[in-house]
Image (cartoon, rainbow, N blue to C red):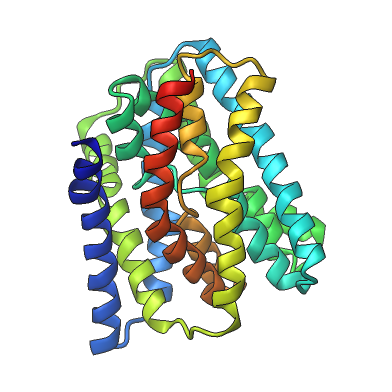
Length: 304
């Protein structure tokens, strides 16, 4: 029953929206840059504010989740860098490959999957994972992709031009000082948050329609193996190594089995960094994650 629920209520809507974007682009060419900038500079910061400021987790769980996410990021970076070096990718492809392996879809896929497998606590833990992922992908991720065009110092400054750092700061203030936001400010933020999933998936579908299946498809298969097969194995070993509380350990391991984050496509488009490969990686990993997520749920339910 759980797997049927995942297929019908989570996976099917995702692919309907991707398909709508795909066929829309085929019928009428769309300026994807406008949609991308709306997502990066408006909708996603609003989502980060509403998510961070309303999540309720103990300090121990938040700390364990933060340490796990940072350690997992380092391990996935080392993995992707090693693979890219062995396969002799150029610098631009290496950066895009790094992002496709390091950042997984903690939002539109992670929220429903975690909540289904671990009702209540799963959603709360996943909100922290999403917050950390968003912060890292729009800081470190921007540094990785933007250094192709500018120096390291300029790339560092570029990170602070993105609104996500300020969204995190605002969310922390709202949460810490228990600020009661007036409805005329809070309601628009919630409306923008509700637009994230359909807008991001439509953007992905439009990008897929623009994608030419060539060498990027082969590279995406390598990314698929790293993201969906090796990542959960590394995540399982990491929770044991860090001796993370068994209450949240299964949720953290499950999160590492999710497909490549859609945000990697948005970043690739924003900084012109192998967007065709990024779209392929997201699409492939999303399709095959049906099997990955089902398998990992079964394993973590019986292994902790």
